[in-house]
Image (cartoon, rainbow, N blue to C red; front, side):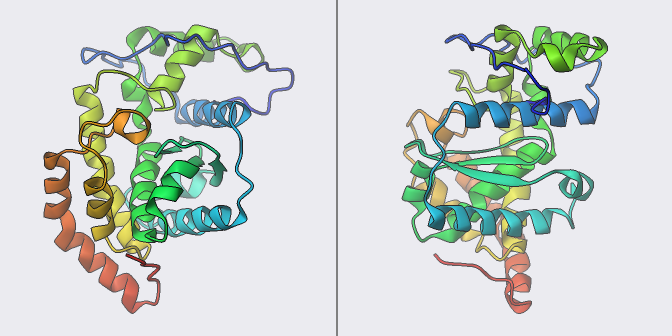
Length: 270
């Protein structure tokens, strides 16, 4: 993730059972520099694209680009404005049946065709999903998801002047994929649940400011089977508590949406 510009860097062969899965007891005592976090995000974005099939659907490409730009424009006025302005935002559509999307520190975003096929013409739902994922990237949530061992390995890599050319070991690479949500884990940890709530809350507001009806977020999660696995459902449980929180936040988000409509920014199709 962070070092796509380095010549000769070979992507590691990632083991099937990823190392570096975080535990609730993890305490990050030495934060990584923000620039390094964003480089790591870029590395995973590039890694995912190298190991995926990019969609050639121009309609999908235009849709996700417009949706992301609306959400990012709102983010540049909010809590994470500094990061939103610095990120090099770019979005790619990947041919995959998973109902999922991923956004990485640094600005890389991947949207799966499975998600686009499900939401169809309901752009509000797509706006909600991208708003949610953009918050994960801007807040750099993935550092909190690292195991202590993985974090220490990255700190050591930063201290090594050759780290940009050596790349990552398979174990570190696999841990990064888990921490950034590009690999599924079987246990949803408390820290992840807290991040999910924050991403839901700020994300639905960003989508609303971008002109997407915030009720789309509720529609999306209600459409997901509560006990399904895979895709977003692997780390994004669709449960009554999540939907209830979104309903509680709806009045404030709807005010932002109404203001966006008044300014001519609405992109809503429910």
